[in-house]
Amino acid sequence: MKQQMRIDFVSDVSCPWCAIGLKSLQQALQRVGDEIDADIHFQPFELNPGMKAEGQDIAEHITEKYGSTPAQLAQSQETIRQRGASVGFTFDMDKRSRIYNTFDAHRLLHWAETQGLEHQLALKEKLLDAYFTQGEDPSNHALLLRTVGEAGLDVEQARTVLESDAYADEVRRQEYYWKRAGINSVPAVIVNERHLISGGQPPEVFEQALRQIAQQENEQLEQDEA
Image 1 (cartoon, rainbow, N blue to C red):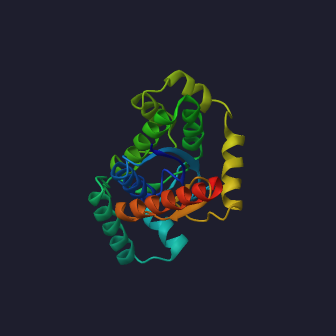
Image 2 (image 1 turned 90 degrees about the vertical axis):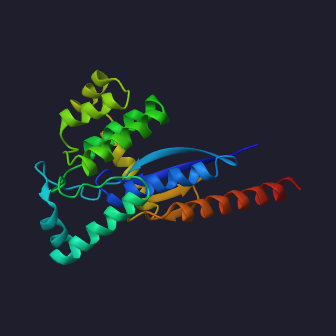
Image 3 (image 1 turned 45 degrees about the horizontal axis):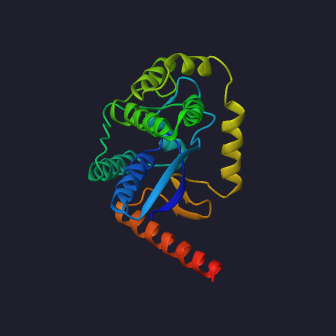
């Protein structure tokens, strides 16, 4: 019998390591698919909650936030591009020149979960592709509605969400919850609400961690039943 796992994937759609981490986690889950059946729930985390509507130039933003030089930024982008390619995700650095606000994207992801986890996953993947591969603005409502349609969700329902404050309070509460839980950087992968795997790890690291967690929980179950 497969072991059931809940995975909370805390992330932002403007976080490159979150795109890498998701692809890596999915590959790891395929490798352990005979033993583990996992449900992934995407949880909100805004890297830049105060980002203005028009966004900000990436180089300017990275320099202000981290003090990176142009050479350091170029090296970081090349590392991200290579890591993405290794797990089948395309980063087109020439198309992506700005950082944007992602709050409305998180509201839509929260709504998508109410429609089914498979729809939330599909929307998450479409949003990551739109920003990192196509260089589009994830705060733009037209782009958001297009990704909703591509993910197989109801566009008119999504439009109603975007044109209101629907799920705003829920997203803020979730963000607060994860920050109170000690999540200060993403991606953060929480398994069964108690095991943390931090960062955009390679697939083999996720695989090993999932197997260890499964073994620990099986042993604990056997002890409890003894």
